[in-house]
Image (cartoon, rainbow, N blue to C red; front, side):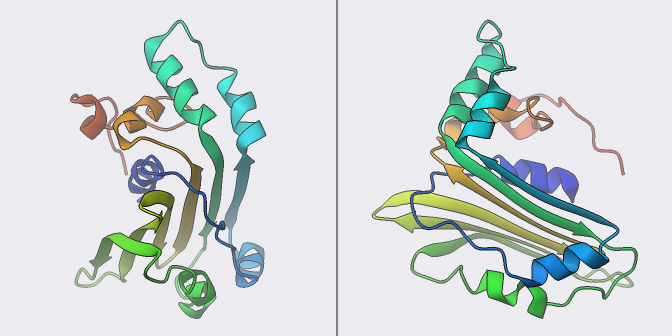
Length: 184
């Protein structure tokens, strides 16, 4: 799931509309999670991070240019020691923000393997005045809940430039050859 989220995080598009708001229930979840991530990188923090990338290395230069167009990356992730510690109602307020016509589903994946609990991934794109203005992923497993929201202008053709930078693995689909292997 973590590699899927990394891949999906690469798919962020431009965000001119109002950013999503994380519900108060997420604060409660952070207190009962064994691991909790609350990441908020605004444009100035992203600019500072891109300062560590070299303009002399083509891949890093592309990533640096791409990051310069971002307004922010917002991630909330919770890992629990046992299933059932969060409920669908904990994310209902968040999901209520993704209403048509602005938000359109891009991917909806539900896994109900026999003997295993349900896993879901939902990716949505916000469109405003004909432009892609936001991207969000909500990934839920029995013991894990992750939301990724990326704001800023990104050309989908440039997404591969982020692979190998900022801790994001290189993705085969963007580079044509396997650059990382998935180990679970």
